[in-house]
Structures are given as structure tokens and as C-alpha cells.
Image (cartoon, rainbow, N blue to C red; front, side, top):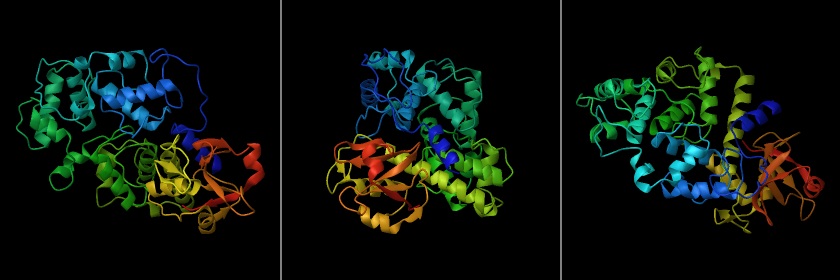
Length: 394
């Protein structure tokens, strides 16, 4: 099971240990998930200035948050949506402000688009219509007959005036979520997949949790944990297992005949649950890389070791005690750590005085007094000599 868990985290593109790269000017090299570099810091700051990177600070690490910001920028500006910052993405970021679509204008719009319109705003419209299940053609930034037909279909499904013109009411509806009554049917015609961020994803996660497939807090972001949860739901409910929440999956999910996770075998259920929770824990921990160490700290202004763990577990809805000793006493001993388990060290006396979160590949993430939040190898001579054991609190 350990191999499976590690693989799932690696597949999620989370940070284990990324080497520093040689200095280069922003745009001289292609940036992608896993890189740790000052160019990534510049990229994050550029995305933040346009409203796409919403983390509280630029970290220099290209993780899932940065990838998502790049994807949204690309979708809004008519670029290939791959989450990789290459020459075209950099060119668009450096372009004149009047030619770049900012995030504030990419979700809704006061503009009116109609047959004959072209550009990034149309690209964004087509992508949103695709996300809602009304547009299946190429996203090309050209408002032609197929786009008009998709707009009419969407307007009809949402009870709007059907004129094929994307105006303020249509854009507003594109940002709304079907929650009950007549709008439920519209929700089940939507296709949600990894990379989507919307309130409809929150509703999906809420329902998956109700049925026992999703064990994290609902975030509205369709990441690897949500994909794994959808796959498990599809497998138990005899649907095509692809991790994509399309019309059939959503219809079954929100229907009265949806099978709960308890109908699956205990072994599969336990393994999937641990994998899902472990991935969520590491995803949360990864957000804080670079946060400074502060004795007694429990906030992003600075963490001590146990304060960092308490914050990370709280992010995924798990309550843990405050100190390293209390966390040691409250956990269940495991023979060997798996992803998401807490590893403990004796740095002051014979008892547990420091801890971190195991992330696989014999590495752990922790808030060190001389490093702040960072990733360290368990094979490091200092830590290996002081290792006490691992505990599971999830």
C-alpha cells in the first residue's frame, strides 16, 4: 500500500525536493510544476498583479496553486491551457495591459458578445460553456454559429431570454451554480474535471463526502483528491472509471440510487481513504513551504514544528493537539510511515521534541528552527540519528 500512496502523491505533482536552477531572466526558460526558482517568484508576482495568483505571497515554488493560476490565465487569454509557463504565456504576461484579460474580467463580463465577435473574451466564453456542458467544439476565440447555438442552449437551460447573445445576464448565469429544483437538471448536464474551480465542484465534493467517498474539506477546486474520489464512486456504481464528473456520473451521484462507499470492500475503502487523506495533507503542507520558523508560532507569520502540523491538519478538517508530545501521545503507532503520517524526533531529550509530516521517498516536510518550512531527507545524518518513530492521526 505504501507504494500506491507515494505514487499518488508524485502523480499529483506535489513537492518533494526540487533542485535550485541557474539564474535566468523571466521568460528565458520554460517553467512547470516541481521547479523552485526566482523566475517562478517573478511569474507568481506577474500572475498576482493580474488577479490570477491568489496565494498570500510569491513562494518561488511551482506547485498546484501556481499551475492552476497559469491555466486560468491561459484560458482567459486564448492560449493553450496546459499549466506550463512557456514562451507564449510569458509573451502574453508581458504584453500591453490593454491586450491582457485580467482575472477580474475573466469570470463574468459586462461586455456583450455576439456572432462575429473574436478574441480572448470569446475564448473564455467558449471555455465556460464547455465547462457547463453546452459547447463541444474547438475553443478558438471566434463567435460563430456553433458558439451561438451553445449560448442559446445554455440560456434555455437556465431560463434566460434565448437570443444567442452573451450579455450581462448570460455571463452572470455562467458563474452561478445549480443547487436545487429546476436547476438540478442543468447541474447534471455539466462536465467537471481536474483543474475546474467553481461552486459546482463544491457541491460535487459535498455529495461525495455525504456518500463516504470524499474525506477532505470542500474547496471548490477539482484536484487530484477529488479525481480519486470520483473514480472510487464510479467504480462502486458501475460507471466508466475516468475521474471525470460528466452527465452520467453527476446524474447517478445526485440521484436516489447512488451507492455509498460502504458498499465497497473494506480493504479497498480503507486504502483509498488513506490515500485521499494523505494527498490532502501533503497538498496543504506544500502551501506553506518557505514560511519562517517562529517559536510558539501557529500562523503564516511563522510556525514552530507542532504549530505547523496543527495548521496543516486543521486545513483538511482534522483536529490535533498543540505540542509535539501531545501529538505523539494522541497518534496510533505505525511500523513504517506512509504519506500523511507524522514522524517524530528526539532533539532535546529522549522524548519527542520535533516532528514533521512524511511525504514519501524517505522525506518529510517540517518547520525547522534554522530553515522554516522545508523538505528534508529522513536519511540526513542529524535526523536519522534522532528518529523516534511514526504516528497516524487520520
